[in-house]
Length: 348
Image 1: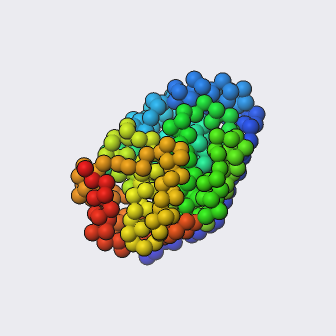
Image 2: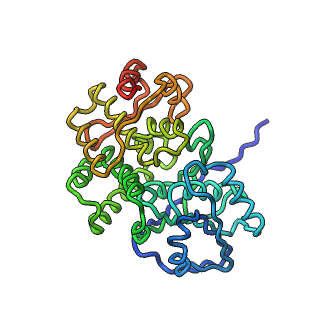
Image 3: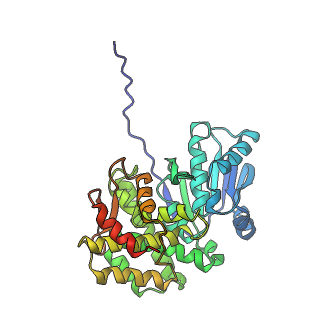
């Protein structure tokens, strides 16, 4: 005997990304703003001038990638339970990528899913992390290995929050902008080579370019079955670096910058990219004082950690490699000796 459950249906997860001054908004429900002390100190007053709700709560978690873990999730959830949040309640992620990823994850599992809004406050989160519905936390095995795809209700991007961004944080965001240009848009890359992103109008154009690129990719491949995985260019190497340094030495975008340089070296070795193109990318990263080198102490251990990457399998490692400028390829057939040869260039 078989009992069939016909669940096939089309779910519309569409939403808008607004790039403008934060609008005034009232929510007739319980709302929790999830943030950290640094962002709250700088910008919470600005947000509260524009956001109101039937019941409004502020939940703060420690600042930093090392706190993107289950303990922080438990802290947030305990507050939601204590204030009797329900399925009609709303979460607002107010911070950088760490806050956005954790808030999105909590909203995906709290009472099996509630709505959330992204209000990103760093360049990295505005151009990348807040768009696309990837949520998650880290554990001892690696970065973002626990999570879910859970799209926000909307994303509100306000350049006002970038006025207090430290230079390192700004550079980390630039790394993700460069990533999207290299993989999908040669014209955008050439724009970045000429651009001065300290100019607010030029920066606004770069943010618009990057968000549109990310949105186009997500629309075609929401759950990362193919095309969207290309946005992880630089991340396969970068995540290992973050894990090895316990998320304390490098910001995420800084690790991605080093990861892009490593991926480019492998692409050059495999004949996918010219040395001149690889150097242009490295020069652009250095323009914003991003790190491009890293000393690998144990090459074999570094290589083995690749297998924990979400795109890899038990026996094959998937590498996202640039194919010139503006194109990308996913390969799970790269010989170990080629990868080791590249890693040895970064060896102690």
